[in-house]
Amino acid sequence: MEFKNIGPIKQGSVDLSDMTIFFGKNGTGKTYISYVIFGILSFLSVNISIFLDDREIQKVINEKKITLDYDQTIERMKQAILKDVKSNMPDILKRSFNRSDKEISRFEVTFKDEDFEKLNYFIKKEDFGEKLTFQEFPQYVIQDVEGISEDKVYEVLIGFELKKNEISISLVEKSSDKEVYEEKYPGPMRTIQGSKELLLTLNRILSSIFRRMRNSVYIPAERIGINVFFKEINKNRLSEYDEIMENVRAGTYIKRKLDVYPSPISSYLTNLNRWKHLYEIFYDKDISFAALELEETREILTSKLLRGRLTIDTEKDEIRYINNNTQDEIPLQISSSSIKSLVGLELYLQTAAKVGDYLIIDEPELNLHPEAQKDLAKVLESLVEVGLKVVISTHSDYLIRELVNIELKKRIDEELNSTNTSKKILAYDFVDGSINQIPNLPKEQTINNFDEVTDDIEDRYYDLLDKYQELLEEKEK
Image 1 (tube, rainbow, N blue to C red):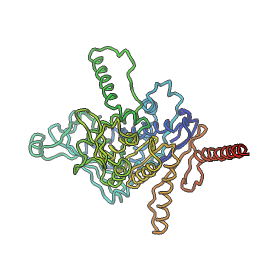
Image 2: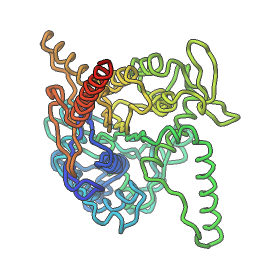
Image 3: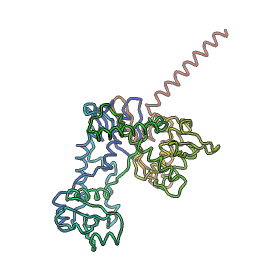
Image 4: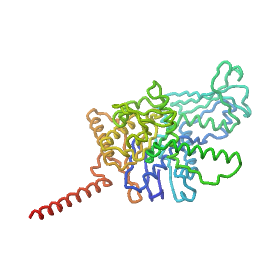
């Protein structure tokens, strides 16, 4: 992804990796770029691009089956997505920053063909094996399409054969009519209205099979305030929603500017409410929406960083913290700042985290002691190990150094055991309006962003100490 005139960033590019690290001084553009990346990833996860054409849909209608070349179909899908990203970029930027057309008019973002490969966006055909058959649920009733009976029930079958390099789309008519089928096989059934909706449905199904539909999660630097005051923020959002609906019903305009947040903040607020609800239902239960592979990561976070667990007071609509040692239960508002900082990550990992998610955290080290930052580095590294893609923006030398130590330890183990399973780390130094890639962070013995400041403080300390000592010695004479 390439960026021009994004806040303080004059020009630069970013490739996302298994772990991507942004660092730099305050005001150098790290959050700007994080917001844009979140906006693009969110768009890619929900957008359905139209790459099948009317002629192909008509063939599906007439013959109930069509066969397509795999490589050509994926390329068409890719080009359709690129076109959609480009045409929707102004809206993505407006939502990402909650700014007007004029305010984002100078922003330039380019999502390129090669970014698909770097994001590992399409599933490689070799990963499907020799043959794939995918049945789409629910069953469909198709109306207002000439050549298709409205009294029948259809299912969609997608096939793939590696040797033939072919994708097949089949519209299979069930033997029973609609009423008999519903009685015999009660279950989910949807209605497709017209050929345009059929086109959209088939594009959606193909997209869901051949693309990696990753969730994108943003945990902002503003999280402590949001975590503490989310009840009040929820009330404000609800009152604004009520005002919108009242004006819609009355057919009048809203006279004041409503508080709308940038999409990463708004997304975090929405997720916090959802995670809180799921946490209340599933914590300490045998079921959870979160991936089982994350059990070890959750244990590190809970035992070493939180040193306790959360509970939800439904009546007061508040999060409370229970200390492992004392079993004292206190409202989140009066818990330590480190607990407040980690609440969102804890709720996410316990309830909704999935392998393949993109997790973007702005300043994950907020309010954490250096010892706790070392443990946090282990949490982040373990997330990457099980398959999440992690993007962090940080001011912490401790966090980066510990991540480097963990990576070097893994490389040593791999050399000793003749294995190669390391995940890739890419780091970017934001300086003077540019984004400078550091492709091999573990080999960087000095990181100027931090080391220059540390050296300056130490040099001044020893200079001042020498002067102070000289003064004391002169007084003794």
